[in-house]
Image (tube, rainbow, N blue to C red; front, side, top):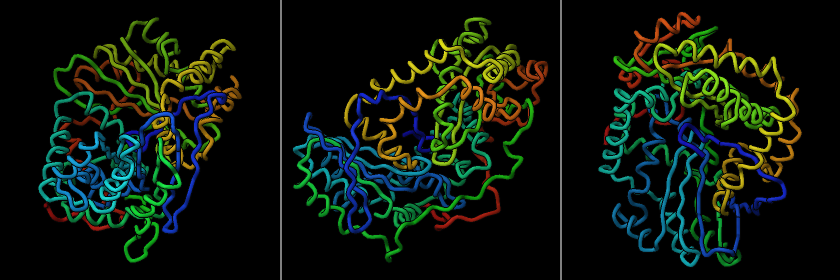
Length: 481
């Protein structure tokens, strides 16, 4: 799971490896408990996922989920910030919190012998956070300082601009924080309101992975979370879609690129993106193979043509990420400013070639072997496997989706590759962003037939306003704490 939304990096698993599948239990209050019991190591990981993330930020309050995730562990229950931190550290344990586009996860990890106090600490963290005003102010300032780096950080500014272009017209267009002014208006009261609305047991998942006595520990789970109720019996609080930007704010047609201007920059940093269906689409299996062939590993087509054959860059690769409702294929690279037009031209040429020249049997086999062989390294350990299951659960992929991945990848044919490349990787609809000296890269872009549809500075990215139309449940931030 990742910060640009609950972004699932899907990699393959041989069916024979048999990743663990949890036993699911539903408590009377609606909380789902996913049991990954394993006695091989004296460790336990306890994680609570609630189904509301950055997408659920209220209108005018983008950054609420991000700020809540940053401040929620600054004291909980009867413990202040220092007391809570020391309570976790005395057990030799660690805690973690993350907010994604579609969910928020809070967890603790430690020795299985400390499972009882750890589940109590997790319950306090999730259900009774202190959210002290001074911690809210400090974390808001810290996030603001990170945002401010966009003014001078070429790669950071490019990532932000590209993310907004790719998410335009979707529920995810605001990202973590839409603008510095909106973040500055968020106070403790807004975090309390968000927490009360969305931290409810219905739809939430408590993951228990590691060495525990399930029968005995079930009683402790019920003690910690059984009395959890939604305020006023409101049940599940489904986040509404936020207001979306106008259709022309990121929907360029033809060969077009947004430019993030950094005067004096000699390099041109490039992102090219294609919108994909959600991870639940039947086409996702063939798209995984397409991505591997295109640019996911060293012998990919982009690397062989653009890097090795033409020497236009030191590195070029493609990757796929997914939120619940949107998938994105991204090509990332950089080059000297005078070569940026040629680099983009050849990149588009390689992408177009997937439709015209399907993979040979050897190329297809190599891509499948890469996918199928890479997963065990990345899921070494029960917690890693359980965490990937939890991400898939958010997307509704079913309990066995990881163990079925290899057989589904194996069924992908060269014709499937050409079909999905034609359907989703049409370069006429590609979205591109380039960060560098706008004056230096304008001519090479034009020479290769690319028009600049928008030019912004890093500072301008911090002052974007939300569209005036549409509303979102929850209080509009109005105070500073």
